[in-house]
Image (cartoon, rainbow, N blue to C red; front, side):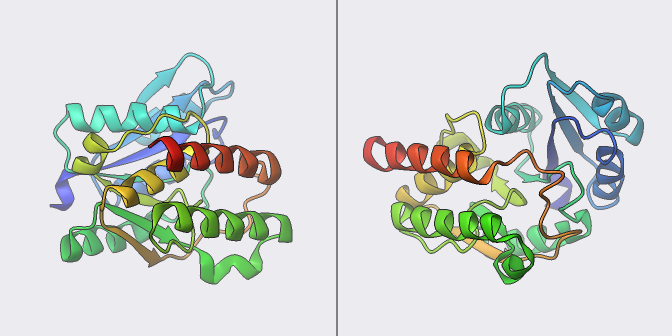
Length: 225
């Protein structure tokens, strides 16, 4: 089963880190795709040199759009699941076997890498944004989710086919939790370790603005489906 899992890495201006992430991911699984989301630096060149298949957006479309591009590529090539890894080095590809093992054992449709045991190491604004988002999304999804903003995840191919993800930005990852929960899909959280905890300097996530956008998308998803 492990050979049927693709790693998808959405990347925006991650030229200094994406090569190491690709190489570490290839040490775990043989299929690694980087979605270059309109980078203006050497991200695509670094990813290709490290051995990834690189898909391109001509300009920045947002993380949700990058995920959809990666998901579409995985389905078109017959993969049974996708593991998403951030390009900045925060996610440790050495943790990938945890996701594959949990998927084998449970058959869960969505497996989220849970960082809640590490929230104490985050700056307050980031920690508070994560905790509020997890609470709100749990209420809307009807499932307890302790870390709704973690991008280190496994998505089954059946989930990707059945659950739409319409938002283009960071809200897409929250949207899919709500829709998966409402459709009765199995959502599992597993604790993970990180390369570094806070990620302020490398993340494109804006705690206030993106949390508000997530709240809006989640509310619309809860009301309109």
